[in-house]
Image (cartoon, rainbow, N blue to C red; front, side, top):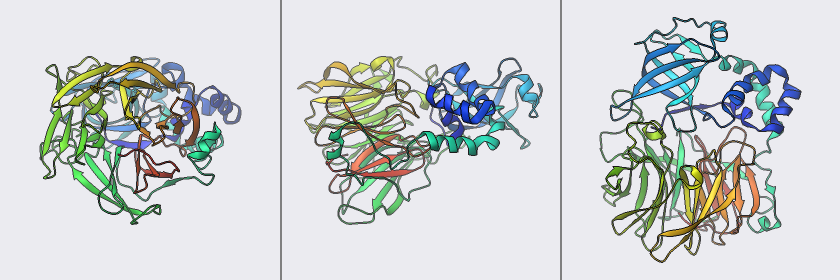
Length: 493
């Protein structure tokens, strides 16, 4: 199951910073600020919860456990197929809750409420409470949220002091000079209104062409058209809706929620085939689908050995017509333990000549996510789940299968938000990944060349090269679209 993204929490993002950051916060911020950060870090570790709040409407309370050190709210909610998913939400202990207006009878089994929470990064149906809204409109906050209004300004100030600005390119190797000019800078484009940007792909039709990207919780594909006819384009253009109910063949599945209020799920990764038809990973239909010229959809992959795919994540096409995709983390069906899950692993797949082949599963012991090919199409790159922060490389065989999985790079020791997610490659074989706290640029040998830090509180999800010269790198985050001019053309889409 994927969710409606509500907001980013700058304070919680600050708390993810590792040992150096924590010590600095303790020194300048005092015990009060550390008290906000420490529950998430000490009890669960610094990768337990996502940083975007998700909303569950029409949630039915099944149990309210008033206990130390943490109270728990158990609730049921229906997914878009009408299946009941059971969630467990953690909040503070009785003493802390009582001090902010809670009581042991605040919630009773059968109460219908709206829940806002930070879901577990593991994909399991569990998380940390942000707040709840009762049927009468009363709002009850989590204990940690009560500190937010007092300390958010300080947290943001500290975060700015500890995190390079978006224009401060970090250069690890002189080879980066061939990729980024001295005046290269990250620019935010005037594109707003989406809630969960993912999977961009450039479409070279018309002048200058256009960028498509997914809004996963919005169940839409958006189109960004630069305001120019040739490269380089100015940081201006038009954002429009390219496709409604992007995650479903069923024409009635329009919007972010269905008639019962259950969330609907759109596309994730996007690519083009040899005929420039759009091929998409759908987290609604849980399939790989091709959008035909007349708007009809053809399912390319939906089941492996009779079992449904879980949550197709990213996708890339090869010049001979082969398509590779990842079946990633299982949030779109409610987590790893969801009764809707049929495959007990997360796979890397090949679709060719109407046949679906499993190439590998759980590289590095984690779900695969981003996927890309080298310029000669002899190497396939795959990232794994963001908490592991690894990229793997495979040798592509003449029949398009792969072998010789090897670790290309491990970014687990790097500080900051997120982990390696979307991938792209330029015409010289350099690898670009939306990874820990920004955009990382790596040599074909896996050497760190440079990093473009993301602005405060932003985690880049994926990226794509675009414009006629293919020297504009577009990056999407949850609610914003960015671009960066480079000096080496990238591979499209």
